[in-house]
Length: 114
Image (cartoon, rainbow, N blue to C red; front, side, top):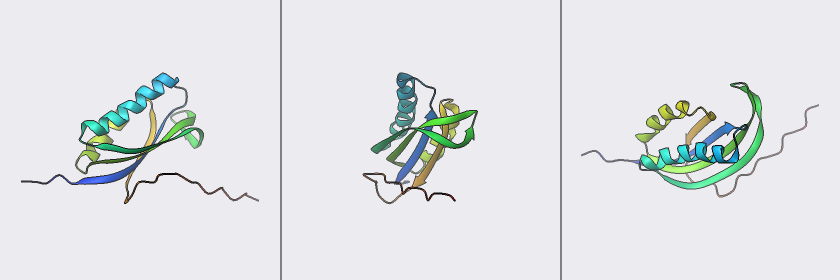
């Protein structure tokens, strides 16, 4: 009998900034529902708001950023990665395995360029 192992993950998701609030909520719910439908559990959601992208992606210069901490069976990660490109409102995503949930997110200010 195989044992399902759960892993703790941090995911960053950038949704199109051109979406209405309602459409953005539906697009984000699609991401979170995909996690919970695969036996996962959302631990923490950080909504970082609308930000400028470092470079143009799919013709977009801005996006709405979310950082999500979630626990899911390790076997489900590959399935999630296959589903994400099908979400046309999702500009970029990144998933990393982490040891603990960050309760707050702090970013160091960039050094001024001379």
